[in-house]
Image (tube, rainbow, N blue to C red; front, side, top):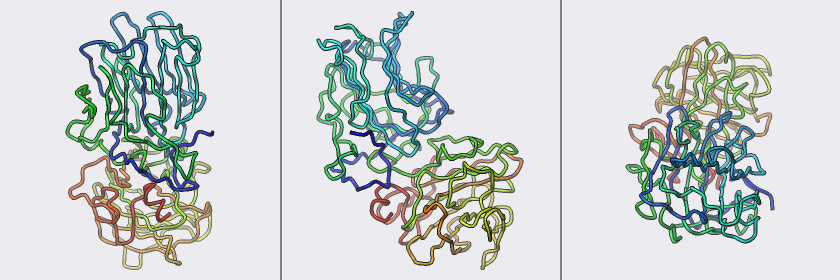
Length: 465
């Protein structure tokens, strides 16, 4: 059975008897992490690790989990330079074992589920360490000696999202982080394949499991105590994470973010779980970034806060990926953007011919701290994009069919300054003065989406996309 990422649009739509309400957003630049030091040791031979993650920053080798004792024995999991998950045990001078996933995890729009099953007491070598991804058997290790004693749940400090130094911080999202002490479980204890779409893996309720002495269940539902153990009292200390890092972007409702793989020559720096873009000035001249979700139908709304706006910023939509060429947003006929310098909208009369146009009602400039709303209508026969400044409609523009078949959110700057913006598809990385959701109750925006427009998330895409 193939390994599928949790990515929409999907061939068919899974239904969720169990809904994951929250995830936690890690930013490697902020050194986010959790840590806990148990008062006593747990099992040294039987354990299960289960967690969902959605990657943010690429080009780093972040740690998922790490523990080290006073003798420099180490157990950890990290993502390597080939985007594979590595699980290892180190004894101070060499590796007792190392397990590397067969699969690579390079989709920044996808939620992945990992289960690491440890049973060193097992008489069959292949059963002592196994890795499953999205319910599928992915890799195993046969070199571990029977009854090997590991430190995975020892009474030494364990870290989530960094190593013990700490360094190599994780960047992205975690949901449903579970550790079972004293039992080696199959992935079916944590998830199941969808009945109608049997290659799609989805979570199930884990609250009834037996977690053991040092086991825990981080569901990230308490914004005032993000390290709360929902299964008991094995709570984690929270480092550099606050309530704003709790999100509703989860493995049962996947939200759009900025696409780390369509960031022209990696000129812009993405952070805050790919919800913040920092352009680098002259080296990123004409570079723009796009969102992870492209849409061909439906009515969609999102916002972007101008965190630091210079003179030449454009927020809008693109009908193509940008990575193949070095052009600004508005050079082609299926690109439209709201330009802050003079309040024009950008759109070319023919491909390769950058052009600026006046809104019929007049132009309105915008600057730092303004929130630009975009409402994209692909359902009304005459397709349109509406641009808002702080909830005031600036103009409506008729748009053509996109060259790729899909329109993507897009952001561009083209001057000699370092500037930043924070796109918000419903999980902002900044505080709102008055949070508003769409008519289905999804997303959290500064301003209410226009009637009939929805947040770009998988549940809405399944209904309207």
